[in-house]
Image 1 (cartoon, rainbow over the protein chains, first blue to last red):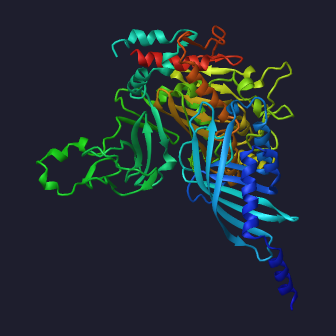
Image 2 (cartoon, rainbow over the protein chains, first blue to last red):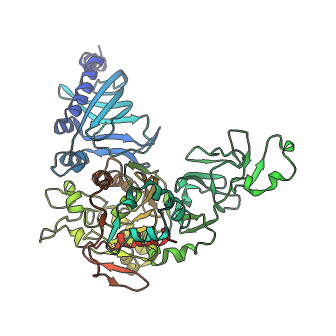
Image 3 (cartoon, rainbow over the protein chains, first blue to last red):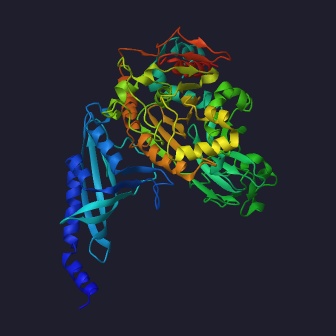
Length: 173
Length: 427
């Protein structure tokens, strides 16, 4: 048996299953529901980004505005602000629930270290005094092996109404 | 409507206060749509949205659907987006290119200048009826542009655009001059946010350097500077508090201009430098020389706001457009612009920064939106009738040409807007 064949076999044995990938992404959504933003931030790779495009079929975050485009250091500022006592747009706070479904592995690297996983989501946001808000669309997660677990390289949230006007957005999708 | 006499409107705006109904009364909003949005120069779009013949960009003027289009000879047109036949909105996409704009209902076609190009089964209409230009897509009475910014007015007797802008025209110049090629481009789409509040709450806010310490306290980092909001190793993050505890921005002055325009002094303490900014600066120096480059890059204004609804965000190299929908509902667009001739990364960095300063999810705008909605709620109360805009009354410095500088977050900019509002509404 060649070395390459051995390593592919090892990679297959170590590859994450769809169930494991789904659990990771569902757990990530739970962290957001529970507003454990620091724990959420820790899931991202150092070069990780959180992205919600503002146009259908938007190819780049550099050539078109986005609803959210947070590199890891920006995400940190966002989270510091979410915890700041003077964040008026979270007084009162939002309560959210995200429901995920239709998981598919779109792509996996041969060495079993990188994955692109697609899922669908519905998210409700309630805030006392404000209208109930409902968002929906697709998540596309690019994930990378980190030790025994995974980290997020890109989390992309494609909203069905991404090209429309939004009231204030405080909760990442 | 009989209670709404010119006298009544005049009394709603006093020297240092404005009546709350200016923000809450839907009947007043209806009058604004005519007396303000029907009689002043309203920004429609930037000519870079329609570079080629047949290009169109659909938007609104006041509440009315209009289209900015470019005709065969490169001429810009602003048309009501309405079929001359039965009134259906002809163009539904935001942007596109068509030689003939075709109505989906009965198939009438219009040229980009609005003239009627084709009517199915035309001979069954009485002779001569379709020769009347009103059965095309009717053009707005006046269209003028300045350095790519296209304005339209429904009133044929309105003063020329340049006269209307007066000294406030410098706001457009100061932003466009930062482009080495002397032109800017709307190239990356726009942010759109919406709030349950009157359009003038956003307009007031754009001349308000008094609110950041309270409203934007959550944007200040442990180093006492606001988060980095534009590119450059230097000049991208401004110090928030002065040694005496006041917000730096609130120690700055505001200007009020004739016809309701206003501007705020820049909150940045340093000129942008470092990294690609140095490369960009070298391009400016090679084109315009050192002395002129220093002038171009100076932190002169934070923004310049043109009455009624355009905000030139000079520090953020973006353009904000306010769209009134009803007395208590407003949509706002924010367009990052490309400085033509500058390194590409200047423009792409800007797109990234505007995401965190002026989008619906941005660190700054969200708290402003909370403030606008709380104002709209609070102003429902019957017990107190007035909104106070008294900061700096009597302390203004006359700079000539009707320009008044109000030191220390004076509310002069808001007073300038409301005075213009009063003059138009009581005319």
